[in-house]
Length: 161
Image (cartoon, rainbow, N blue to C red; front, side, top):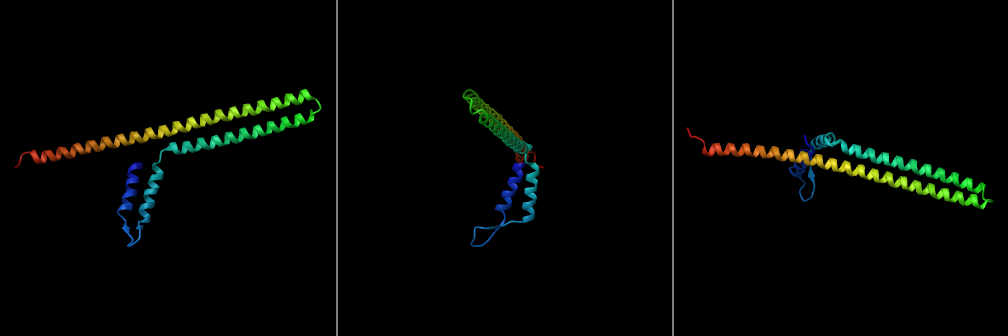
């Protein structure tokens, strides 16, 4: 059953449920609702799982980049502390630390851009898929409507025995 149909069934389940007198509450058959929710879980596109994986991978990459940056910064600080008596070397170490930080920030920005582009692509793909499903559903409903209209026309204009 398509996601839209499942959502329609859930809505119908709520709309057609018995109401509690004097309360804005409804009594819904738990088994029916759980069945529909289970169907919905099975029907959700894999793109949602892909998007979740992309976000997890993004976080892992950012965490690794931050760990590497922290390790590099710590290494640069230790190196600079050992050579503090030599002004030129200290200045070079600070410049190197800045370059490392800049490089890390640039890598983080690139990773973020790629992650956002991937997430956008997944959203766009999911939207496109949903639109295709809706277009297909509209086509099927249009065909069904034509068949019903033809049957009605045949009934109204056909030969009478």
